[in-house]
Picture 1 (cartoon, rainbow, N blue to C red):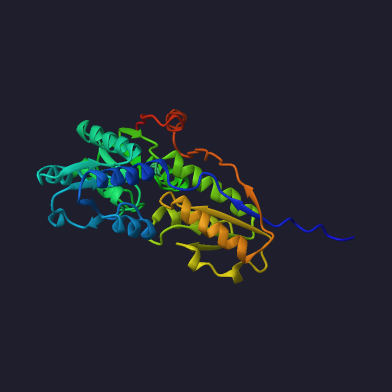
Picture 2 (tube, helix red, strand yellow):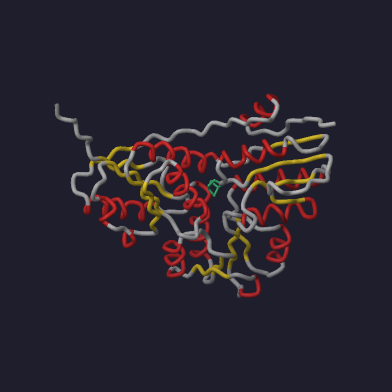
Length: 321
Ligand code: F3S
């Protein structure tokens, strides 16, 4: 009996293209450029060299220090920045445009309120990521970045997540922290649903394909995370910034090819890569993959904590003697 051959398919994750926060930051920068002859961004506006180069051609320049800003308008990128940098920027006498993603802004407020209420704020995320640096700025002397070996000497713990970390990493940190000594624990699930949906979709698609192509800047942490998720599913995975980095050899044996992209990858780069994939493997039919919300399951934390986490609100309290 003949084995049925699988239909060749290009399975494209949804959502794809810029997330809401990145799109908003790019729009604000372009709008500023129409009003000001000079527009600066503190750090690259987003972690995508193609877009940063396009913005530079349009006269929107990235600087690493406030000292490099010379008049015009200054954009604070979607990751946000520490409050003292905002203060210094206000004194420069330039138009200050805050493009901090509203989701990140919410985490900043949570951190500030926890600090004011006397909590030690633990941020689960990557220490060097600009968003985490901004959150540490709001926590001032009461902030720490989670590390499984960290020593904690506080009665009241407040925990938040970097908006783009994988749910599994947050769950693992909560399981660990819930077993430490403390009198009160408040947990805020501050993971952005946009980022979580992309990670869930990447996990789902990776199970169904032979090869995964992940599109995004090599300096984009959330893009690399999508590639890691696909590799964890045991699939051959390639991260590319643009069509020039594709190798047709990757597709020779592939019947099903999955495609996803980081939140800072513009749609035009995605379309360009998709068109190159179709050219190099004629017969690849398209299939759109539905997005799948990630589910939160936290082991080692009380059921009150779990329900508060699910709703994304504060506030589980747990006493350890
Ligand atoms: Fe904001 Fe979420 Fe994007 S935090 S910048 S909408 S990934």
